[in-house]
Length: 186
Image 1 (cartoon, rainbow, N blue to C red):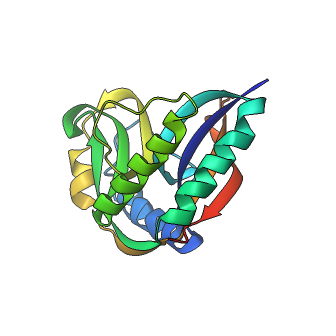
Image 2 (image 1 turned 30 degrees about the vertical axis):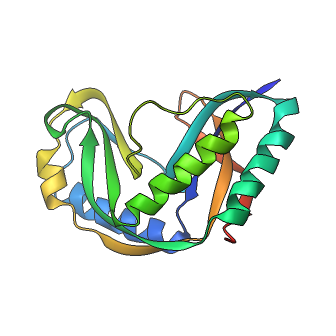
């Protein structure tokens, strides 16, 4: 049996609560376009690498590889700040919050994860890593410039661990389960 897996940074409870408040202010002000679906706060994370379907027998080796990365990588502080949209604010499908501090550290951590998983046969994204936490999705492209302009968030976030997540897909949306967490000890 295969598990749909990814590696990421789980936002702590305080970061999720602060982000939820910022989103609620935008929603109450009527700045989110019709059809925007705000994701459940327990799904908010920063992806380091999406792996896709992983065979059960590979999970142990994957855990070992991630433990090795975490043993070498130091904890660091990041700053959740502002919002953006993919592919563009005028025709957004995804709305996210980014990092104003710590983005280079997250990108370096993602590269370390990708190097470790490459030895297990996984390939890295060809795109440059853009650390962000997705908080809303739109079925149809929409203009979210008003929502982005009205979104205010500045929150310090300590990155002390990485997590191996399992993604459960359903009609109601994705649900993420943390299979294992690895403390950054470098």
